[in-house]
Image (cartoon, rainbow, N blue to C red; front, side, top):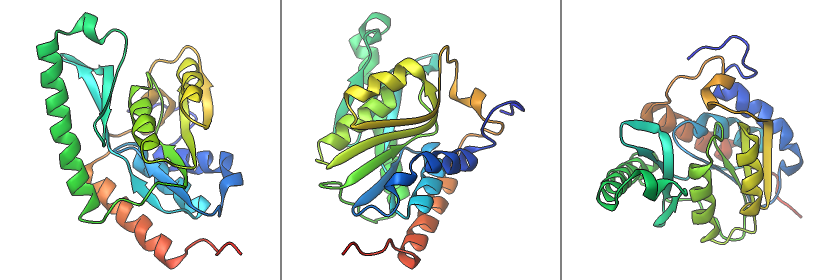
Amino acid sequence: MTTSHAPFRDRHHAGRVLAEQLESHRNKEGLLVLALPRGGVAVGFEVARALRAPLDIFVVRKLGLPGNEEYAIGAIASGGVCVMNSLANEVMGPEALSKVIARERAELERRELLYRRKRPAVPVRGRHVIVVDDGLATGSTMRAAVQAIRKQHPAYLTVAVPVGAQDTTESLRDVADEVVCVVALSPFRAVSLWYQDFPQASDDEVCSLLEEAHRQHELDPPPAVL
């Protein structure tokens, strides 16, 4: 989708703008950027590069209403976390909901294997973790990610996005230590409206960006903290 008046040219531009808001965290010891695939990886790539932090993924799957998949009724994340919104049981029966969860869990596992390419996840315990996505609408996906990451005991957890619904952004302050959102809006219709160029991210793009981020971090690690 192309929207000429949108504030962000694309996800990479949004990531660079977001990184400016996170500049105070640059070079912090133990800093880790976790991006939510697929759309959050390009944003996270730019944030990690600017802050000189390692980049890893955290796979979360939105649970969409059958026939209207863009309408999120919840989300699942690595580690068995499942977050449902208050309308889930009203709009779907238990059997239909179970089918949706099973399908999305299979896709979650597929993506984990494909994106990691046998590279182990970067440890989270005791680190300052910045969780990045390309935007926040209902917040179900990000909330599931935060709950799952909390189980791994980070020292500090920041949610960071270029754009989001104002009420969603505020609600995440209950589960994150810090929420950074460049543009928080109300009313808010869709993340895509705030990007001039917002193509669907591909598996190949995710894998390529993760490989490039890994190479860059090996070549230019943050300075040792004395």
